[in-house]
Amino acid sequence: MKRLHTKTAFTAAIAVLIVLLAAIAVLAVAIGPVPVPVEKVLAVLKDVLFRQTTPDAYSQSQYHIIWNIRMPRIVMSMISGAGLAVSGTVMQAIVRNPIADPYILGVSSGASTGAAIALLFPSAVLFHGGLSVTVMAFLGAMLASVAVYSLSFSRESRSINPTSLILAGTAVSAILSAVTNLLIFMAQNKDSISSIYYWQMGSLASSQWTDIPVPAVIVICGCGIILLYTQKMNLLMIGEEDAYALGLNIKAVRLVLMVCSSFMVASIVANTGIIGFVGLMIPHIVRLMVGSDNTKVVPLSALAGAIFLILADTVARTAFGSTELPIGIVTAFTGAPFFLYLMKKKKYTFGGKR
Image (cartoon, rainbow, N blue to C red; front, side):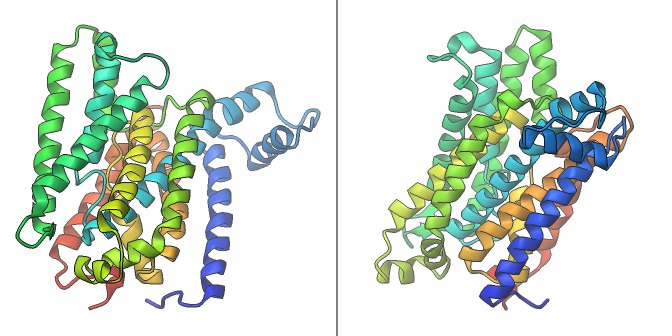
């Protein structure tokens, strides 16, 4: 596959993805159990964004469907897809392993456990309010990250063992999933139990405008900080010894990147539940196009991740008519075969080089 090496080609790729993202978002709003013409969607967006009023351009029911029901869901899809894809990019760079992502390394399971505690047992949480679920999800994500990295760190080589990392992530994820299921078993509220079960499979169905600000701010700030660290991520990917020789403070860089990634994943999981494999697939696909330079991979992954999750959510809410499929099932059907492909592909290195 021909890669985008020049700055002009990279800029063109960014522009194409932005246009494609906007077009897919508009089409996704129009598609649903109640179809809405694209011109009606554009009319509502024009009126809301530019504070205009176009008489008889759409009905009140169409406005409600477009702006109050589907648009928050599309925006949450963009935020979640971008955040998960960038988090996957970061984790793959930190550990120099193409099959690392928040789901496989247990970060999503940690966030899920923390969020489950806040949702099922709010009286056990020291702090309360709208941010309690996000804060608990972040703490769970951080604890999972520390556990996985500690278990996979080799004292002899003073580095992270990629094989041990996957095994540790799998084990920690299994333990945390068991803890979450135990919490569900111990809970008394049947409505909460039902919602948690559905939430564990990932869903954007309940997204509202009031849910958007917190994950939006966290993901935008997290991606902004990560963009400032892309050159240091490139140094990490050439090997710890070489990065250290070039003067990189490996522990400090890893800490900043890990905190940013965990915060992003936690804010997303707290609102959408567990959505797996986005952080695994998207960075790999982008690297096949642009190589391993994270200054290009990170922004392109954010846009590609947003596009992918909008498409996945559209399939989830339309494939079975009025019955909605959890989005985690859609991403798993797409991502699990991709994961097996990466496992089978020998001699893989970042960017597809051999």
